[in-house]
Length: 352
Image 1 (spheres, rainbow, N blue to C red):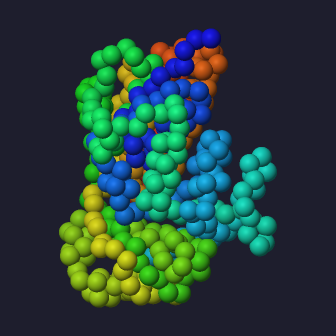
Image 2: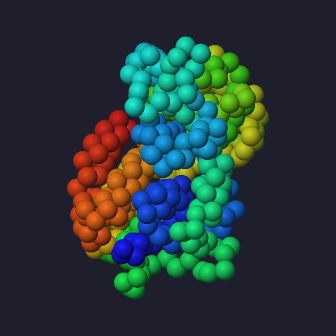
Image 3: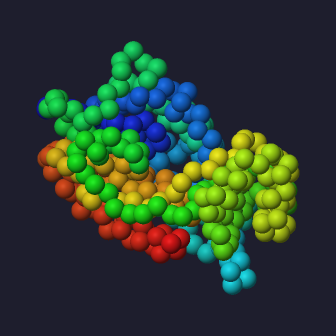
């Protein structure tokens, strides 16, 4: 029997950690590394929207049962366009149930449209699972070994996964450029106490200054993603809590009313980017090292995890001897580019 295939995963965020678990599930040995410590990886204050493609991947990897209690399902999505004063509501009944991979249903027998989950609990779970995997070596900033940040020169790895984010040092070292643009907007995020919101409803509001998302977190809490010109976001970020909530109250759709802040609002720039190529040699760009999009719409993490789903499929083929490891990069690029181009072009058209 040939020795197990070996992979190096650079970057231990949600996409890098899930990539490592996907490779292990495919029968590979994995080295996962990140210069950040466990605490730094888990402390980020943000939430993600998960759709059914991410749910299917977690089920294939045997993780859904552990992850789902960390998530808040939503059964309706309210879309409001303030520019034309029209609204539209999507419900669970508007999509066909997935009978092949059943998920928990509500009292009406409907599957959720999607789920919302916080970054911290998700990362804690993924890293805990990795530390209990005998075929994974985890090298973080708080471990004994330092995590290097460059592609390996040693032929010891059959595959290298660059999941080190939008400022990927691995991508730069490989000489891979990216194209795209930065939006004139920033996004401001905050966890808020919210009154008047059904617990199973998400909101997306298209306003002249930019889109806004309100995502349910359960127990009267919600994640706010508020887009606006950069100067306005920085101004709102500097407001005291009472002034911020007063400003927010004036733009939330009725009957939503903000009652409090759970963390300090934080503004960050947003843009759309796609790497000029998704692989070079035995190195693959996965997640935001390869692409990035506007956070409103909830496509970001799901797009990254569809990269992981394809990586898992190809890694299983390589384990079975049906695909040479040196051919994984070309196959990955061929399979992922159409999805990435379609989604990024649609998001770019919607938010430009």
